[in-house]
Length: 397
Image (cartoon, rainbow, N blue to C red; front, side, top):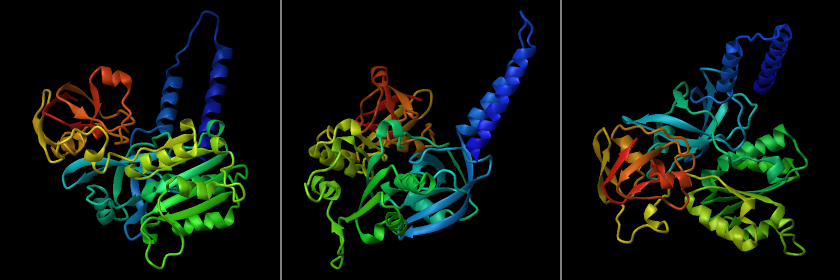
């Protein structure tokens, strides 16, 4: 409906422009301000910087995860691509912070779903799961991210590798592809890794989709099964992926290099799955992954200085502002927020560069997953969401 309204507005705009062109006399101009303002309004409605959402329903998915269903109160919901996310802003005990959450509902339905799983020793997720109530208002960004299906580039043979709450963007994709588009041309395969059967998010919905659609195959793999469990067990390694995708007769994976592989889950899963896919012979350009926040333990990342404790405290001077203390094992952005200094943020995974700040002195560590532009590196910019202080710093916001 939103797309239809947009097309109607664009058609009306074109008609008015043609009428004015017909009335225009040679050598005379006319005022374009109305058209410029209309264009800006349309762009703002399609790509809002901020949205006000009201919580209308809470769905308990598992003992440690909930789906929060929202409606927008300041305008209509903008169009989005299945697989995109919102950055949700929240005041937690006086600390203004934010976290990105993938949209788990498909486009074109009433409401918008964000599914949140509790993160051990987390800061925001425990607060949301325990404190959010129906009727509460929250502020978010508009839809962001590039983790979605591009038909002309990605093709029609898709393999989804999900771990834990990394299933959320795939839920949006699957519902849209199977229920909304109803495309029989797509060949979809989901391999979903979970620690235990009780942790499986959308378990019944996924099985129902697999039972209903012949072109969707679903495999659940449990890494820490109870003694009575009889399903697939283990990790999403090369053997497991081969077992699910290979032809039973030949043992080979049909169209291996033509498939598109999407990976989403905890950071520890990425290197594991990427290594498995490369071992199978998947070309790197056929792998698409969604970054999933900073590492759980940055001291285990390749390149972390030997002997540097995560509990080491460094002094950070904000040019023209105040001095704060920052832990070596915590993203600089978290330390800034804890001291009341808010840095713009969207992805909080080192990809979007919205949080970049200028490093005037000192050294920081960026994990390999951080996607700093070469121009940022050359000009001394760092991504605060994945920058870890290695000594005293001076920065400019």
